[in-house]
Image (spheres, rainbow, N blue to C red):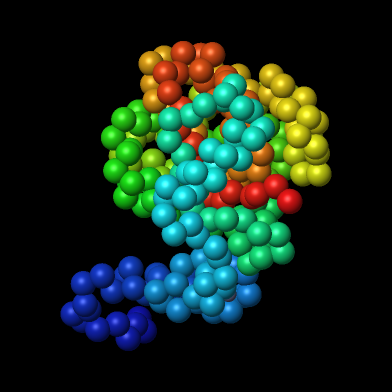
Length: 248
Ligand SMILES: [Zn+2]
């Protein structure tokens, strides 16, 4: 005699999905990326109290203004961009830094999707996404990608592109040489470190490209990547990053 499973003869529609969901939660508890507390159903990535410590720009124009002045301070008029979106102001030793660090180095790539969705909402809500033709994540050097297994900018860019209903061109930019980490470098060193760092290999002629990265510090990476896209014929560049770190 075959033992019977105690599953109702007329289960609710979607019960398999619900069971799978519960099993998944059991195996991979949904915890806050910052404080490791178990998340409530309406929380995603972070608990409410850690999220309350993040410092979002109240208006998208405020984030854009700070991004423009950061880049103008470094590049003057040699690097101009169409529109810019940043979600958060970055503070050292903050819960946001801890979350971004876990996303980048700790293998928590699901956080990238949370940030990407938020950034997508910000861009879409600004009403300026109409002219954008495609979304391009800032690439990692292939060796770094092997080391980390994923590119955090691409993980952020995917839900953003979905939200805007634009294609993501994740292979159009290539990182040429193995640049040192930008952390701790002076402005001049950063620029030299990134000289010729990117090459555009796909067809972006005439396009308005939305370039995506996790954190903008001096804008050097964005400037170098934009330069390669413009050289390949892109018509306009807009920028989106999860956070903007101001110079101390
Ligand atoms: Zn938390």
